[in-house]
Amino acid sequence: MSIEKTLEDREKRYGDFATHAMITQEIKATMSMTPKWDLLGSAKKEALEMIAHKIGRILNGDPDYKDSWHDIMGYAKLVEDSIPDHKES
Image 1 (cartoon, rainbow, N blue to C red):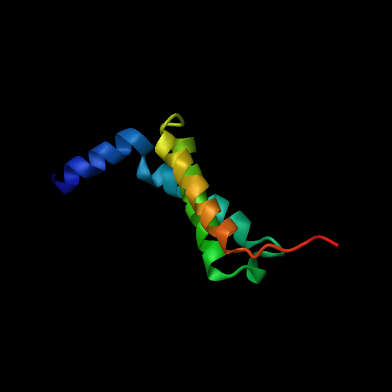
Image 2 (image 1 turned 60 degrees about the vertical axis):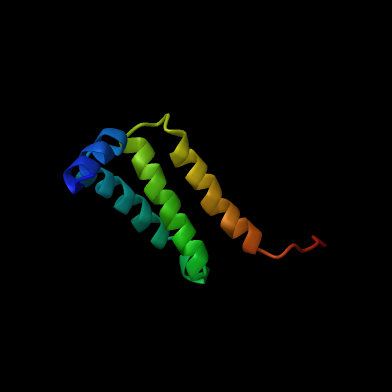
């Protein structure tokens, strides 16, 4: 498949790239300005940024594309699995 065909297919699914980028960058900028952002490790930050990317695709493209929602669950699950269980006092 040519790169042109790939880009055409992605635009049909996710919408215009520049608009998607604007949406996603705004979400990421907001996240990075929060008080706890610097306390997060790289895996948690990356998971949240990937979730922001998927949210941007949903808001700019096809909101009924299940794979985007599935990916969000996957990134959240990776973080959840990395957090040790502890008992509440």
